[in-house]
Amino acid sequence: MSPLKLQLYRFSFWLAPTTALSFWYGASTALREPALHWMTWWPLLVSYGIVPVLDLLAGRVVTQFSAAEQTRLARDRMLRVIPWLCALSWLVTLAWALAIAPQVKALPWTSVLGFVVSLGIVGGILAINVGHELIHRNNRLERMLGGVLLASVCYGVFKVEHVRGHHLRVATADDPATARRGESAYGFVLRSIAGTHRHGWRLERDRLARAGRTGWGALVGNEVLHWSLLSAALALAAYAWGGGAGLSVMVAAALVAVVELELVNYIEHYGLLRRCDASGTHEPVQHLHSWDYSGWLTNALLINLQRHSDHHAHGGRGYGALNSHTDAPQLPASYAAMIVAALLPPVFYRVMDARLRARK
Image (cartoon, rainbow, N blue to C red; front, side, top):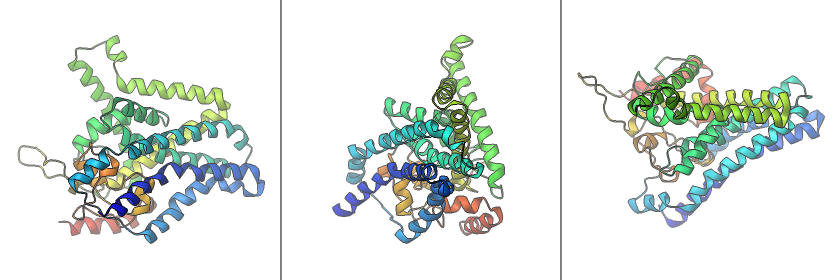
């Protein structure tokens, strides 16, 4: 990659922290102009309508970094700062949303619903997506921040299950976050949420048992319990900050964010399975076991989440150094467009099952 293109690539990620702007603009406009109360839906329209179209117009950026470029990107201070800015923008946005929740309650119920859905969409991007990046870091403070972000949407269990469960079991029947061919998004979301909680608690129980910690010691050392308690504390803070309206908004928006995450899981791994030998041993995880997409705009906004094939092949690799893989399974459009398709199962099956058949 030329020096100029590399610089443009690096600076494109400054778009990521701006995701919250659509929520601030939509909510403030709805409260300021009664006739525009529908603007609480603005982040949904931007994320799932405008951005996918702009992504198609912007085109794809396929990269294969040299070893020197990857080393530079892995050490890039600016790229390490951007997730922190995303985290700050989310926490500020959440606090502001809870503070204005009593005012929003006076709007028509359709606009209140738009406010909650929009906050959840932003939380899925800035809390869960950024938290996902941080929990893979080798820095303890960054991993802790990732856990805080996940706890802010009541999904701290994801920190444990994703790293120690999903990355080991991906593309197998044992992984709740791997969608089966022919499975609808609706059934998958319920199965994945339940499986994530069940397996996350089991992972911690088994870890503590191996360390000889039982009884009170097992409770004190249980990481899933720690993040669950933090979520409960944040819920109490939401009530203190915004009253019953604030608490309701936080819980409902968290549910939207978690569902959005699971819809992303659905399209990232739909129908892909690792081969298994006669002894029951699965082949190693490769970039061939996740769907990939190289759309420039959405990868900038999602700090390269769509380069998911390389992420699973190299789980510790930072977002800025992730490669594209042209031989990996390729999605036909951005995550936002594919989520819309997933909500219409016949459409999704027609598009994706044909691609699965073509890979055999």
